[in-house]
Image (cartoon, rainbow, N blue to C red; front, side, top):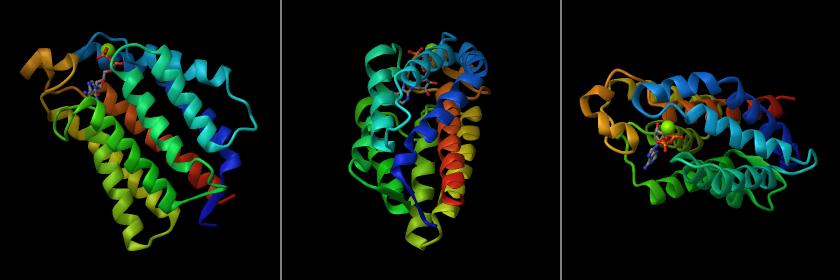
Amino acid sequence: MDSFPSTQGSVVIRNLVKTIQDNATYLSELDGATGDGDHGINMSKGFGLALERLDPQIDLATGLDLLGSTLLTEIGGAMGPLYGTLFIKMATTCQGKATIDAAIFGAMLHAGLLGVQDLGDAQVGDKTLIDTLAPAEAACAAAIAEGVSFTAALRRMAQAAEAGKESTRSLVAKIGRASRLGERSRGHLDAGATSCFLILDSLATSMITLLND
Ligand code: ADP
Ligand code: MG
């Protein structure tokens, strides 16, 4: 199958929350090296609150919107508004779609990326989550243009996300709290780029499972 029913949305969101909760300590450790060490804790708190409010019957758009709104309204720091916007834009793009296919998912990522960049103004190379999200979105769009299967497009997206995350290790932060460190930010993975990889990788894994069920 090259699409899955959007009524499977709560599984996707539940897996996403578990991924963030399982990696909360790791993400805060990463943020501790170049920032204030709260990234994993904040993320885990916000994702956990969304899980408490998650109705198992909801579709993907409703689940993503719930997650986005919870992050936007309840989580401080840079991440609440940025990830809040990502998930809300993704939700709006798949609103009312009974099934999710590669084209819809590509459009969701595209809208999410534009939303985050509109708000945060970070570019590739600034050592932020954009270093993960932008190449992942581009890889997904390229795969869709080539006409590969949805599963293959998701795999390529996750690979590009991982490479993008790894690229932040050698970068100097130009935006956000870590930019205060200047050269000393080099040599560390960016916390947001890492959480963004974990998010995209979890989305890909969940969706590939649904596609091949
Ligand atoms: P804070 O910096 O407020 O403590 P977090 O620790 O939750 O927030 O998140 C830090 C992460 O936010 C960074 O690792 C970086 O990836 C991301 N970030 C910061 N500013 C921006 C921005 N303007 N655009 C995109 N991502 C950003
Ligand atoms: Mg922080």
